[in-house]
Each structure stands twice: as structure tokens, then as C-alpha cells.
Length: 352
Image (cartoon, rainbow, N blue to C red; front, side):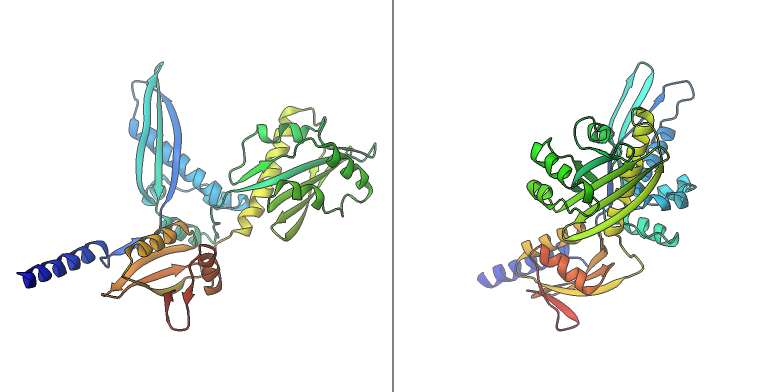
């Protein structure tokens, strides 16, 4: 009796292994675009499918705004609806309602990551990882005519910067109106272009910050941006035609342009070279299924992993093939940051 019970348990475990660890391909996570809102008048020729199609276009445009730098947008302008649909994995209707002869729809769309990357690669566009981050943002206005500086009080950028939610990836944190900071900036006004603002920045415990120094005269507005990404400093110089800061429309336009510049830089910092397709073979101990599930979830989270699959398994190990858009050192660093390390001495890496 014991013998048959043992045989039964063996085949049950084997069946479960075959169920959970089939060698069918597993894709990394899709791109999820949520809460896309569309509305159209409910008229005689109303077509719900047409509304949904408009939602697909809007969702794709939103995804592209997160993945692609602004100077590449024009390359995608003429994409056809059928091309967009071919990259959609699934969609959900999150809400629909009729109010005063108006139809309102909210949908979520899942785009196939590999197809999106392939589409962009064919257009010679390198996408970026979708990484949101908080930046301290300090805007300073220097009136070159009066040789004066505006920091907090009466600073139109300070007052209006976050009233326009045009940014996608950067969450801008404006500093508090601190008298000590104000005096420190005034003290260094003659050397403001070289001042590092470290005393102010360190108060906010952020690894990312942007100091925007706006030099205004009658003809031009020159913007010197000192951008700190962890220990790295980046200097940008941009020039704009002068305008009246009291003109709300012009001010909003100026703010949006600056935000695009900063988000483009952030995208560039997180760019994915999809032409690099590094195949990795990784084996993981089969004794602890939790580890395997956790690793798979991490593979899904990492945008640089375009694809992974379970190639094989036995009683001791699960074997994964991973396609990584980067160098082996970059993969090791990313996994180390998540507290996973590998023995890389052999062709097949082993999770320690």
C-alpha cells in the first residue's frame, strides 16, 4: 500500500511540475496604459467601435510619450490604426456611461512589449525605460537689465510650475520658501553659474535635482540648467525668444518646453539599446518554488528584459533563457540591486 502511495505522490508532483513549468514561451510584461478617457456625442450614426479605436490611438500616443524622446515623435505621427491594433495584447473597458446625450468611455490597453520595441527599432528609435522619479526643482530668474534675482516671491515659474501637469516621468518638487536659502543664493549671485547649491539640495534628501537659472533681457531668455542625477552633473544651455512673464499663455508654453527638455534628458539617461540582444542562460534551484516565482516577477518588471522563457527543468534546476538589452555587467548590477547574485564562471549562470 505504501509503495502505491509513494508512486501516486511522485506522479502528482511530476504532473504539477509539468503544469507550472511548461516550456512554452513566457513574455516579459506588457506595457499597461490605464484610464484612457474618450467621449463622443451619442448621435444617430454613433459607433462604439469607433470610440474604442480612438481610445487605442490615445493609449498608444500616451505610451510613446513615456518611451520616446520628443525629437522622435514625428517619426511615429503617421502610424495607421491597424499597426497600433497589431501591437495590442488586450484591452479592458473600465467604465462607460451616458450623460446628456454624450457617451463617456474609460479603457485600459495592454501593448505587447516585444512588438512595440520591434516597431521602434525598425524606425531607428531607441526607447527608454519607463522610470518615474522625483526631482528637486529650483527656478531662479535673473533680470539682466536691473541685475536682480527673483527666487521665491513674485517668481512666476515658482508659482506656476506645478499648476500645469504636462510632465510624464518627472515629479517636480519645489523648495519651501526658506529665508536661509534665499540669503545663500543672494550671497552667491555674482558667481551663481558656478555655485553648486549643495547646501540647499542636501536638505531635501533627494538624489535628483534641477537648478534652472533663467537670464532674462529684452531680446532673449537664456536658461542655464544644472542637473544632478545622483553624483553626476549635467549642464544644459537653452535659448528662447523673450516674452512677458505676466502673459499666462506664453508662460505656460515656456514651462512646457522646459519640462520636455528635462524629460528628454531623463529618457536619454534611461535609454534602451534594443539592437543589443544578449542571450543569457540561467539556472535556479528547483527546491524552492518561491524563488523561481520571485525571479520571474523581477524579469517581468525589468524593461531591459525583452523576453524570457523556461527552456528546461529537471528534479534539481529550472533553466531560463533571458534576452537582455544591455551588457552582462548591467544585468548583474540590476539584479544585485534587487539582492540577487549569480555565479557567472560558466556559460550557464547559477543563482546563488
